[in-house]
Image (tube, rainbow, N blue to C red; front, side):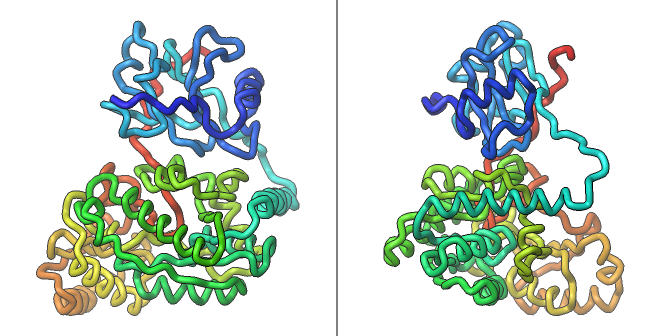
Length: 414
């Protein structure tokens, strides 16, 4: 078993985290934090901590939590990487873990009815924080899918750096043609220089195997190609659109690649969550302010079934048909030749029409599927992912490692 990194605390400085333990301040820093505090104030013995927004991943072995005699903060019992542990569970955001169990220390305040200008003030503060982050890095390339997160970073970078900022879109078999066209359009809308970096995930057998870490392999290749393109342009820094909500959302191993390759994530560093990202996009007048997140095409293929060009192509063609028919929330999952069509609940009535059923069967068999089914549970993210409740967004965000939340039934008394 691999021991956790010698860097025992990620994110905010240790002094700020110790003070947050003392005061229960939920947001002591613009950055998140996670890791081990050896001498926490008001507590005996070391503790593991994770900030209230879950912006940094943190995992602990399940067994030590059930055994009072075992210290969950011992080096072999916790890690920033779930792959280091035999039976990992995610430390809940806002919690402290020690020999005594799990204590929920930090919660977001309930502000009650907001003042009319409160929301705009929060957006303005988030804008200032992001611009400050960007202006410290010099020339940079933005990993750009054209989704709302990367579009906001590109707009901020263009405002802060002008021609010294470039948007770069990774072009491969997993990116739908419509998404590439969208990225080109949004870059023009922003006014930022737009480059494409072409590569193929199918060159990597680890990606093709489609195991639990597919998104890690994809993101490593994608960002590696981005760095190559950036260096060709004389740029050393690559940034992405990972926001403060991303690290705590389900099974998203792509964030590990972001950390390993030292990608700059200004929204994450400034503590900007998804709602604030959309508000900033709206303030800039970006057409993608309300655009839903879009996962890459490989997310339509169940874990364990190989990713092939044939499967990616027929999924893209099938989804193009649904898009042209006016559906907004949908996925076509490829179960080795069987198409499982998911339609958003508020659009299911249209999908249940016999004429639609006949037409979708005809079109989807034409693009290569043998059988076509309609999933009566409707569209939901991650229905073919390892834990069944999170879809890895392979385009706009890096994603983060995730696991089922740790059971906090054993807690400190309050």
